[in-house]
Length: 120
Length: 110
Image (cartoon, rainbow over all chains, first blue to last red; front, side, top):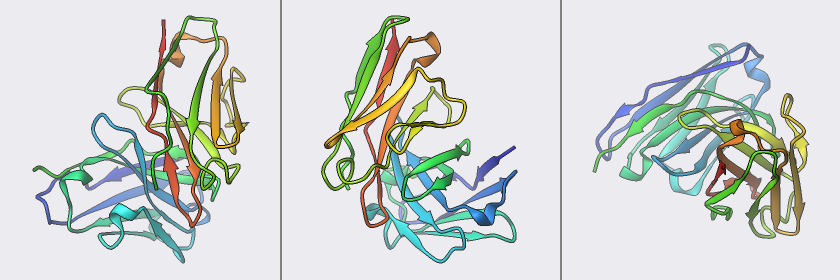
């Protein structure tokens, strides 16, 4: 069965960095685009970034451009999100999401999420 | 990249139907047939219910249906059941490899 397991979350001071990981299993990882979606406490969902199945293209929401980098290692079936210059407003649950069809935005599997807290 | 507009709350009694709207612009909802709907129970990850406006994800009951007219998409839940109580989010492709979500609607089954 498809599993997406995020890790790497924690409490980090403003301006510091954090790297999230997502271990994928149960499907052919290298065949799917992957995304990060986040949800601030008590708030709605926000799309963060997408990476093509082969890592050849990456796109970001405006608020993280220049600070976050999405990447993947298809030999390790792992997705990453390098987050630099973290801000208080980056506090959220970060979900790793499998793309069934882009640009349809058809996200068919989600991880359980990892919590990132940037205290004020 | 403004969020799509959803009503904060909706409600209905068991067995009734309820419709949740999702309003965007011609640059997102109105411009593409790429609207999805997600259900999220408290403390859980979202689950896809509808994709490409009206296609049901595998295993989703046919009580759930989606539609779109102009810049507004809608999710209808017929024959409401207690387990349908959850938060619902719409999303739409917004061009240039961007995706936007709605603010979410809390559905209460009375």
